[in-house]
Length: 200
Image (tube, rainbow, N blue to C red):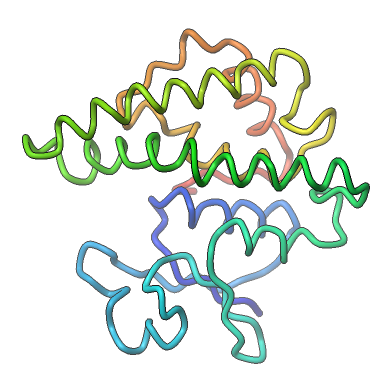
């Protein structure tokens, strides 16, 4: 059985949890408290020397880290990862977009507001996150006006990667009302019969 080391409130950890539920794959969840510094402890660093969650531990003790890499591993051979090269590359394209253009702003704004309570010394950073986060949301909106999912007609790990922090973007001060296509997509993703919520 897989072990997942993570924090239920983390969008990156939620990606792995959601993927496992969609695949109906059993797992053991090992809670890690990042605010208490548990990712810096020697035992955790032996699993991920980069000191970040999530970590997926396989039956043989091998540990995989980086949430989008874990998604690719878990989805391999399933309907959530297309085999056609162009479509598979588009999945990767959205995963890179999530890590470089979306998560650094949407997730960081959420961390500043939800976890830290908006400290004055991070207010300027928070405001930058708002501008750049909305830019990323506009990119998603444009695509989702054309296709029901980020890569065509099929629900894929591209959607899981971006659903994780987009569906809680309001916790970082992002108003999604100007993005009707994103709102419809969020509902579409959540309607999957094996969907599980972040805290569910």
